[in-house]
Length: 157
Image 1 (cartoon, rainbow, N blue to C red):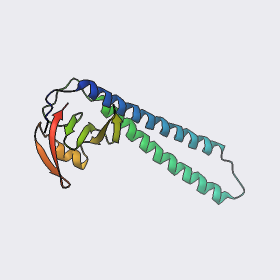
Image 2: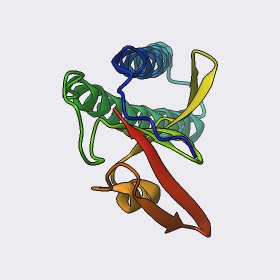
Image 3: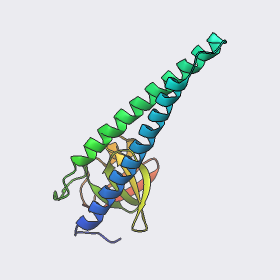
Image 4: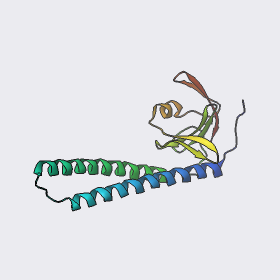
């Protein structure tokens, strides 16, 4: 077992930038979808079949509200990412920590899932996720058992 004592700030910065980029792409896609729905609603003309028109319009409004909610969540996540202090040297695992374990790399920030940075897989998870809660406040060399797997903390950045 190899324990990593030095931090990899450049790599953590690259991971954070990848998260910001992916989140921005999701925001742009949702904003585009919202514009498309708004345009469709504006262009919708009353037809002789009123019930079908009203049903279609109601569906579009529901989809529009759903997308607005998702967009708001993504913008909140973007704000959370801005709170990460790249100069901080963590002594225990918490928000903004890039943690190396025997099971892989985890970036504790927002729930983005698995991403690839510099040909390495990183699991971007939130502190409120089940694994995030299990890892919370752990320190270097500490271990834990989660869902039948043993995790050993090998590095914190």
